[in-house]
Length: 191
Image (cartoon, rainbow, N blue to C red):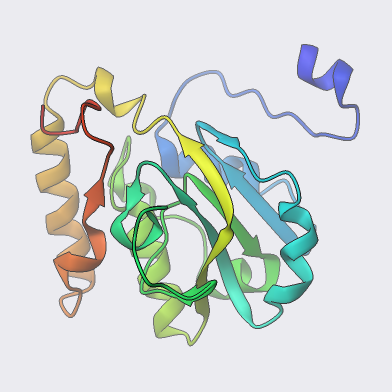
């Protein structure tokens, strides 16, 4: 309730239980009618002027940020990339979605359960419908990386099951586009 008291214009949705990333995000997205939606998982947005850049993304269906822990093409250290980079997929740890694109593509697929690959699936569906996905390299977000997933006993089995579902739904998908990276010394999903 502190958030609601401090920011009365922010709508808070309190769910009785963690139903998984896709279900939780979908519950929030279903309550919003604004033109641009921000999904912010466990991140801290470092770039304070990120809202100033929104007008520059009229042709994008979704915009992601760079980060310390992300899909490889969203890493802040990924070299020699343009300021606005059209990419095959975006991670949903921090993403701006256009409402009309969400309406066209649909919500995240809750068949992915607690998490992993539901964001890649959504992006592949968006690409198939002709929507552009951009990384804006002026926006940096510190991502704490899979805090919920670290509590799962058999993360390898969850990832295997969800990658199989992803490839069943999108057999043309290259595993290169879903390579995640974390800073040296960070806990990884396989450790």
